[in-house]
Image 1 (cartoon, helix red, strand yellow):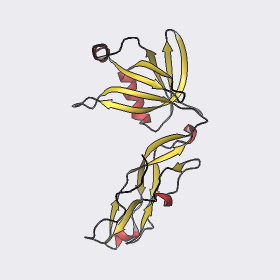
Image 2 (cartoon, rainbow, N blue to C red):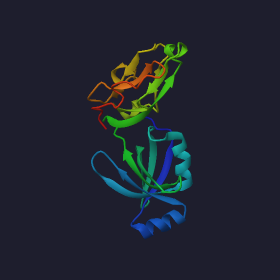
Image 3 (tube, rainbow, N blue to C red):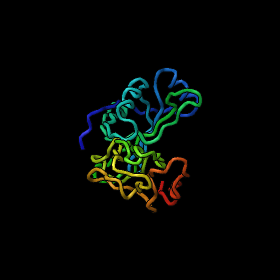
Image 4 (cartoon, rainbow, N blue to C red):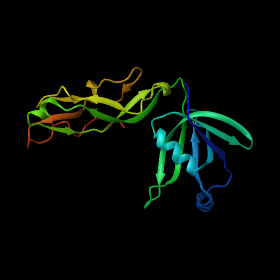
Length: 202
């Protein structure tokens, strides 16, 4: 697995609300690193560098986290796993990083991007989208930023279920029930019976 982007981080000894508040005031964001073995490290990262990296990676791109632990540096391929934002501002409050084992599958939610114009729309139909992202399983090297879904061949009354999606090599959809992703309905008709996606795993 080759990671091209790098984010620097360093361990921190002080935790708690007051320590985190001082950390943020100095331009850093508190974070925690987890790996598949259960190991954790309490970290701090430069907020400006984090914002720049996140604009390129989002939560579906593996990057190198360079961890300075008291002068000893290690590089760990990882993902941004969870984000806590300020309640009233679009600013990071806290992050969780997850160390990506190149030999283990990840369970990740990735966005869907619908391409083309459904054939049924040209005859008056309307596309109803029920899911804009799906859960997948794959090893880190195969992790896609998004799944492209071509809907151009769909006519009125037709749709796509999760099992119908064409996924990149090495990627599997994670679900219990073959739920509907979208349908092309007649104008004014109700949504499809499977729009709630019952049985989808989280």
